[in-house]
Image 1 (cartoon, rainbow, N blue to C red):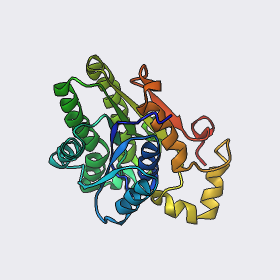
Image 2 (image 1 turned 120 degrees about the vertical axis):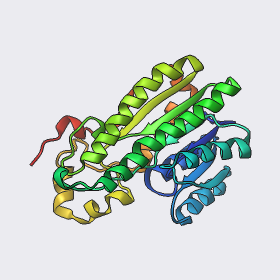
Image 3 (image 1 turned 90 degrees about the vertical axis):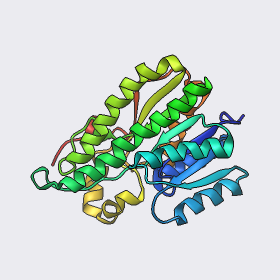
Image 4 (image 1 turned 180 degrees about the horizontal axis):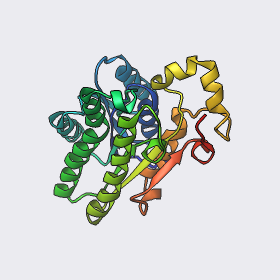
Length: 256
């Protein structure tokens, strides 16, 4: 049975990595998917082609979700194309490494704009549409283990993900009466383009693997399966929670 048959899902940053994996999984469960991307279109086109190859439907939308107007436009496009939107996956995210004392204002602003302001105004536009249509919905934020776990050299990233955790908790209370659930999925170390440098640094990679009880990095599919569950009716009574997908890393992590 296709758990998401007849549903419409918006997935930001769906041109690669975790976002692409989520878009493909939701489509395989029957959802029509709005494939959001920023920058080069090749990844989004690949996502769309894979969705359609498997018999699904995907609509590509280019938007810089760090801009509130673009965030609203993504939601508007979903309603224009499909007449509705039931699921919002706030996946797009960036990180910039720097020691705290050396962090530039521009880098702080960039990380916060994508990782926190984007999900805020996307969720707002999404919730307004659902409220006006008197429809329920699902919001799923792709957060990080670093919404809770320190990550020296990435203070901006940790702050943005910690903010996303509290935003999710607040919106669970505010949006619950509208029938809208919201939850965070917090991945640990996942094989994605953002971790290319780590994957190529064998000593550093092996040191990290030693801290993961399951002994491997995660795959986008590991995250996508949980997102599909939270988007489905099976999770209709779950809201305001963070679900960690990290192979046990948080329970076994220690600094050098």
